[in-house]
Length: 460
Image 1 (cartoon, helix red, strand yellow):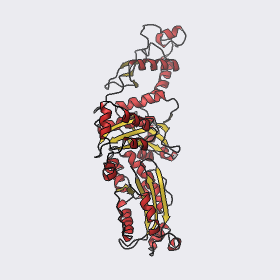
Image 2 (cartoon, one colour; image 1 turned 30 degrees about the horizontal axis):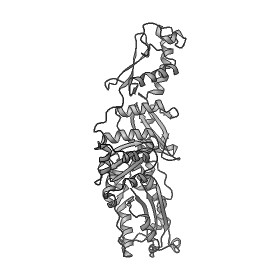
Image 3 (tube, helix red, strand yellow; image 1 turned 120 degrees about the vertical axis):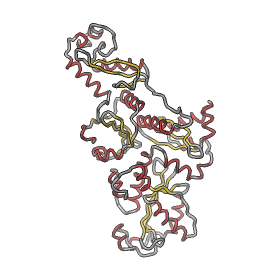
Image 4 (cartoon, one colour; image 1 turned 90 degrees about the vertical axis):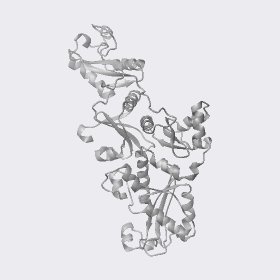
């Protein structure tokens, strides 16, 4: 899906008599900017004094600038097959259409307005003017009231809105508005357009309905598998699919969380309607009569509080063996070995004797708590930092009081150091048990993840 994200500065004056003084357009493919154009424009009419004060653009600056007819062809080229996106799109579209009307050219693009989208997707902001809104969201903006600066900020804002659009209304609306997408596209073309990167992909029919949602560390490779498979479901998808949209996540954890959330939210025709839990066992805990913290592997049960969850019993057992070795825990107190006396590790001097009360509960429990601090986020306020979608960006998963709140992206440290900005860049998501399992499993597997523990007061 292609978007032309633009900003226009004008002379001011009577309605439909304004002239363009500067224009900036960024062609955006839903993931990155693929082309851009920025130019001053000689409006061939005077500029209102208040506009000169606002933008700093005066008639002297525009004396040698190209006239609109000289840049019209470039504007048509860069906006071809695009949906026009602007902050207060009705204004920018009216100005552009009026200029083309003067040339006798029918310029007609569908539009999306970031003011309207922001009000819907980020409610209760103090202001939706571009400058105040992006500052509230931690988006840098330079050259305010100049076309290039405002258009750049609108690109970043639109990326954030796409991220927060959990119901995919933007993409669905875009598909319906883009007549080219109504025609069934060859499967090879769909594969060609897909990135060989980590993320989530959505398959749509000609009406914009979601047929299937999947995730992959290599989306292009995964789509090739879909479109070359000859099983019944794959053949049905191949017949019906007309369009694909992709969300690059950078982080595999975010792709897993997004896929889980979106399948549950949309229940696509070719995904299982209610996705079954991907975990079957959990690690529970209790304090025995002697004051020692004990572990117990048990069948997954939403009524019981779990330290962490596992896909099957063997996975639970093998991971527990690693925890026992790493934190020097007792085999009997972790239910790894069933005995009434000393555990086997005590006999080989790899257990400090908690199983026979030789080690004090306080000393043993301190190591248990170290394990819990590393592998369980119950009751914790923390951030999980991982790869972003490009080299300048990082991803963040937000846990508050042991509850998964959502994820987002940042490229400025102040965006996560300031709680009020952190909460605006986070895409809210539901804290279901599948999401908990995904996060816990990822924490176990990825040893180099950066975890930031928050003070309880800092996230409120």
